[in-house]
Amino acid sequence: MATLAGASLARAASEEDAPEMKVNAATAAEIAKLPRVKQTLVEPPFMPEHEQAASGGPRIIEVTLPIIEKKMQIDDEGTEIWALTFGGSVPGPMIVAHEGDYVEVTLQNLATNMMEHNIDFHSATGALGGGAITKVLPGEQVVMRWKATKPGVFVYHCAPGDVMIPYHVLHGMSGAVMVLPRDGLKDAQGKPFKYDRAYFIGEQDYYIPRDETGAYKKYEVAGEDMADSLDVMRTLTPTHEVFNGKVGALTGEGAMKAKVGETVLFVHAQATRDTRPHLIGGHGDLVWEAGSFNDKPDTNLETWLIRGGSAGAMTYTFQQPGVYAYVNHNLIEAVLLGATAHVVVEGDWNDDLMVQVQKPGPIQTT
Ligand code: CU
Image (cartoon, rainbow, N blue to C red; front, side, top):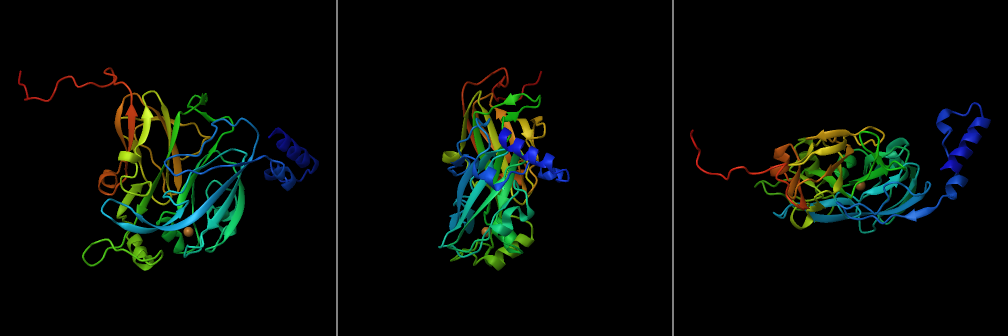
């Protein structure tokens, strides 16, 4: 970065009226010299392989994001949605960069799709977050590049315009970006901080239309539910509120895993609706509630708020084994609508922290 910043500073200094905001702007020739690396995106809750502290200077990170319209089951009762997805999953895959990197996105709208799509990166700078320069019809691809100037976690989503914006996002079209500081995360004291594992939880509200009998309706093709589902959306009352696309997706076989003593980073995104994550039996040791890694994290939170349209990050070092429920602590949404995940933690129990002193038995009077 020294070379790039130095060159840009020298250029600005020679132009006294250069606007301050231009100081760090690299030229096309400078950007062209940057090393390129392909990032292989993976299905959430996993994150792509990444360094926590960057070992080198800024790079151009190439990612390919196919848009796939597909029928998905969103619970075990057979409820379906024609989901609109980035990468085939709800949420779309996490992209990881470091501050100062460039992210070059090849957005592919598969020829088998029905609709026009685009992408708005909350992490990017420029009107519509890239939405205006990424519109693609079925069978087309577009390449756009944005510079990671703000460290933190951010939502990305489709935003094709008008009613298509809520329609697409509420059918699954969002994901997240993590821009790490070049030297990695810092704890509340400003000391370098590392995590042992990282998970991405994308929370999704669905609005599934019902027929006269109250049963969830099924449709033959993507988009056929348009009028019906917009009507349900107007009630602002979701029929499902789920983590990673489906009720129970992150429980059982899909549960997240950790070991006692491990520090786990959880990134939680919700593209449209407020949510309040809570790790039952644990805490938010460090919480970047609004997602900016330039801010000092809060410590020891019991529950934190993820504003609709944002992502937040939390780390916890597990102290005890067991099955931890990670929930949206609106417990109606957690238990009745689906917003519950599990973290299965292996290790030794610590009686000092919690113990059953007496087994259940008849009430004793003294
Ligand atoms: Cu779309």
